[in-house]
Length: 537
Image (cartoon, rainbow, N blue to C red; front, side, top):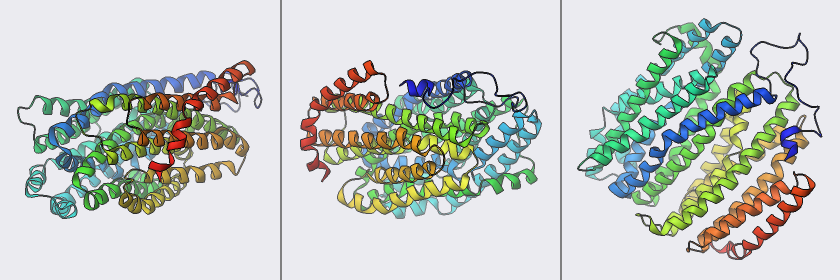
């Protein structure tokens, strides 16, 4: 552990003073202890805002499954989910705008930075108009044909036909302007922005649906879409307050400059939407709308968990973009961040998974073999994709947008290639495990080619294999046993992972204790290992 805190074996003792006055830049964020605390503070505020605002957003799918039923819930979330993904068609303007605004603010040219914000609004609002026109012309008919909807579900589509337009505007505008406090490094504004998202997209729709005398799929869809529209309006007002003036579109010339830099991110947005909906559509057509409904709920919760990592990414992105350090040192720092996130995801996942197994028998919805496989796959995809968060932050922060697209493209091809036969076989959520694992191996190879490769392999390589091994053991135990006592096994696997992972990176006394802890924990999980191969085939 002291390697994480001090790096005494590889670096000299850090200092808060710049290496030399001539090389120091005012406003530059150095990766040293004082600045690291500032980064940690920003992550904490951002994560806290997400957790506070996201409690109701997490509760929403659980209660909607009970109120609407799986089939209607699946259709409602398919529609609202499409709208919530509209920001993927923001042409990558948010990230590039944030990069330009950060650079302008660091050299005292904030007026020029706000000009880029107004230019980005032109592109985003233009895309909103295009998407809205496509939806009004072909959207409802295409969805009804694609999912073979019933007459009642077709009525639902017509009922939200026009409400989709302000909802798309709200999502696209809100997600674009959410970058403003991130680019300007205002952690409390970032937390407030994140809280607004959870409040208006989760808590408000939940209240409207809960207080209604008759809970129908149409009411649920209308409440969620209205929350999206209000979110965009709130972010527009907040962004205008932050800028000190009303933010309106303007500056076509700067828009062309932004688009030249965001080409790869634009393609990435379309790829992300394709990945998100390929699995849902295949399940709805090949399995059932009921299975798609449960899958959508689990995917929704998994995305909410991934968004917590995205809040870390949002803070790291401008940090990597402005850090004045050598490539070797940045890769070393990146390896540390990846290792810490991977470790935290396994430990947190095992704890929450164990709690779930205890609560599962008392849930108001039926959990069968198919649902259990979906849940096990969701945990695996979480662990597989966690390390990619800081990798993407590093690549985008350094301006390697093409590398981001290629890495995500490889992940997407792996998922799209694995999805059809996994769905046919009943493993509805395991394609991200395959895609995420393969993409991380590519990222590790790319980052390990140059300086710092050995350190990257030390921090990430073995840790990733141990993490996926812990998931395989946990999935086997969860699928083989139905009793709440399996929680003890899951917690034992988590403790064993802690012991093996930290045992080689601590001091002598801590190492002895942690290795003993790991041995005890792995003995608790031996029976899970013996029975794990059957359910996993």
